Image (cartoon, rainbow, N blue to C red):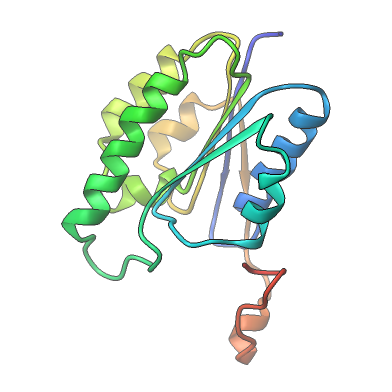
Length: 172
């Protein structure tokens, strides 16, 4: 495989995880192996059911509880994120892994569940062949500077503002 790059999908708009999942599907279609680490997420979403069918190519692990973090994270939130971070570092060294997605790592960093300096060192020292994707709101500028591609999802209009609730198969 060619040299892996670092991609970031960030911003306040919808679609960051969806973009990362699209890349995972593309990679899977080309025979690549993917690991999707979801920080601050523990619920069951429709995409996870679909990914179950691709379990031989796309491995998914969640490092969060089923509820969103409001205010300060609970000790359990921090413990789950740190356990996930430890697993991710080990997984990244697997020679069969081609694409590593750190979904919602921006939120894990924003709430100080992970250390920015440690994540920056990881990005700088990642295996050369490994493609790395980081998603989430509020990705720190230090990581933006290390990335090869940064896409910002900007909300222009959202139906939630009109009171439309999350819909099965569309938002979850």
